[in-house]
Length: 206
Image (cartoon, rainbow, N blue to C red):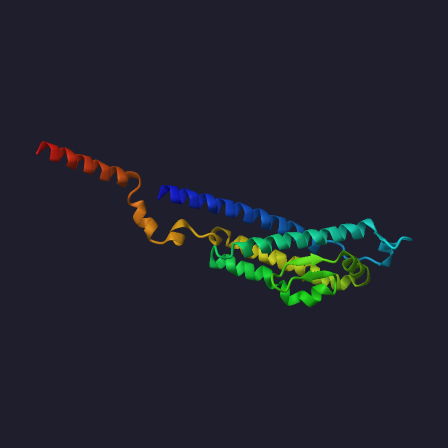
């Protein structure tokens, strides 16, 4: 029983550490996008003679921030999807993070593609750059405080609020059997052993 509980608690600790790191990364990238400058113009894209495009430093920074948000969001989505069997809370969070499918068309218009099966996001950088320089308000509405960044922050807050309950306790996982097993550990086990030794001694004397 002691070995089982120790192994279980180690697994729970690993789960919680990974979850907290994943949520912290997403919270950071979401805040960056929520407060970044979305105002760009056609001057932020230069058409080169070889057909390639060069972005201004500001535009490159904005695209990088959005790509970080998408990557961190996918990490959180994958984490809870991979661990949704752990508890009903984990399953509910997996469903919450996968709700990007409901805005798939809206995201697609600005260069953010959504996997219809998993809800995972991917970035079409050229389309995103064009949207940022021609429809900045639409991009901000879709990705900023009222969009993906805000949604991500809400999901992170929801997960953090119940972080100590997402991975169930050993008793919740294994049921009353752990309570029965605990009777045979610690001082109780020593007492039982003592009684058994006394009984054996009495048998030898009589």
